[in-house]
Image 1 (cartoon, one colour):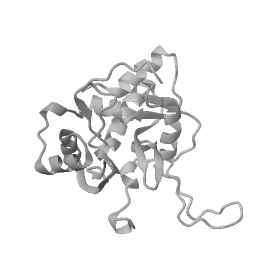
Image 2 (cartoon, rainbow, N blue to C red):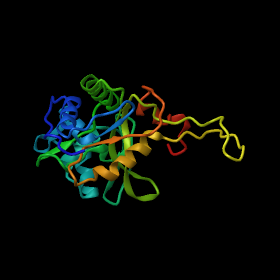
Image 3 (cartoon, rainbow, N blue to C red):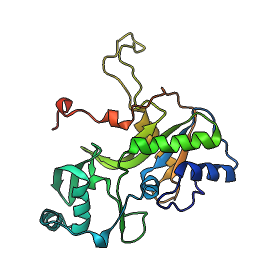
Length: 241
């Protein structure tokens, strides 16, 4: 959905989206899923850093020299991370404070004002909840909201959008204990429905189209408030840490 005004720190994203919908004469329906890109969420929450004001530490300067990166951006990456997971080939993979494993702690300098970097929302699930409540108040509809960002995948080229926050929707569909069409009892199957919706929505939002919001309709999902945080695998169950 285009027609979203330029987002500034302190803006009510739910209100901005509702106003854009009114201008387009598009009415939300109960159980619609509103998919919102991380970038405008970060902008509305003031999660922007002026690069020239960043003073790199020795660790950041050394990593930047090794990887061919801007030491100021590397400093921001380290500040926003719990640990560095891997480094090499000009790439810095970190575990963010929110528990996501991704490139550069999710920090991005594209689609923001020159000289600034966008940081991930501090609590993307809370961000999704605020947007949902604002939209529900403005539209009187029962909704779900997913906040998305673009991630790479280990062992695969290319990137895809994934959910980093959600509200009003359970992040997974639980199929364990149910039978498949051949009578086999599923044991651990639980599709990450919020990631599937995020990937589908990215097909219409696209990276260069200036469309930061999509409405997904007709998807069956469970209600829930466990958030994307519940998808982060516990260290004790992670075979790769």
